[in-house]
Length: 114
Image (cartoon, rainbow, N blue to C red):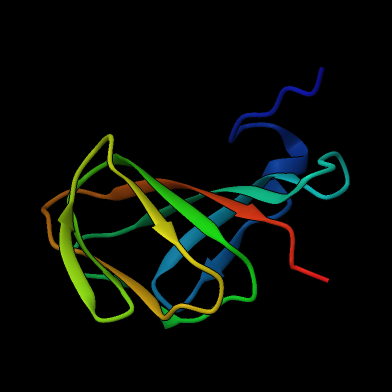
């Protein structure tokens, strides 16, 4: 069993600025995962965004707290706690915090296809 949380020393050591507008931590990575690339936690302050980008892997964003506006490809929708957003491989995506509180989310990523 592998157990991690945001206070774990290995998770704290991975802190980085995520796509220009959020703070992220890698909770689990390929060092301990076999069929997935990573599980990350990200937080986006009010008025900030994870700038639009494309990734070479499939992702799922799971909103934990806060509200926002999610764009995947040409589709845009409001997101709230409990929402899971599927992002296909290579699709442009951007997340904007539209609320008054920090927006937090989990990001699950599949392996990059061979």
